[in-house]
Length: 283
Image 1: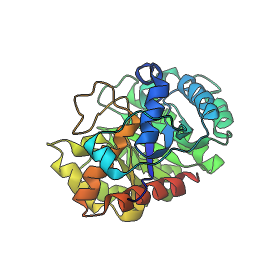
Image 2: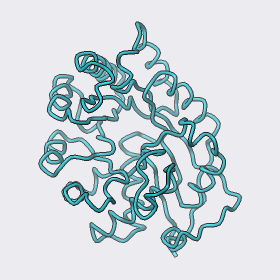
Image 3: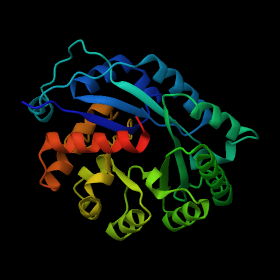
């Protein structure tokens, strides 16, 4: 039986719903073969908490057989925790709270050896918790920071796709250093992301029954630009969609879905997406 090597490329371990049972969350991730977890940030406070968490977890996940994951018969053994990395950025929802000097603080956080990217940053016109003009300003500023620091970027975009691409183009950031996380767009939009050289990360949404268009986007994405994530504690995938709190171990279900969709052996798909993540983030 082949070993499994998975990476959850985007989750929020510092969210209270995961922090409440963090040892259990990490044990289950390790048991599922998740060798690394990237703890995403949407504010300076979350990034500071993620930095502290990452500094405390440097072990490597123990891998288990695929059959254990698919059958959901994984016991809770004593395992070394998955290695935790983090990102530092101000989410569009929090753009209104970006105070003077926030870019300097982001630069300090980005200098940490466990910080793999600036993010998650971008635009979100669905809720407009921050005014669009404020979002666009913070997004452009953080892209400029990423260019200056030569760091990868994690993009959040919701109902703002055209503006997101326009600001990215204006920034001059190399598209090969970008990942669009928890992608939800149809194939034509995926094609535009791929045209700029960016990678695409799929969350549990791709497993939902009504996500046929998104699965077509996943089929369109080349092997070397495909990543997977949970975005936990949100977006629990099928077949565990009823789980109120999603967690990194469930990235295995995203991998199972996409491996089957792409007619790819599960173990190969897991290693492929892990290698893509390590390469993009220089892990």
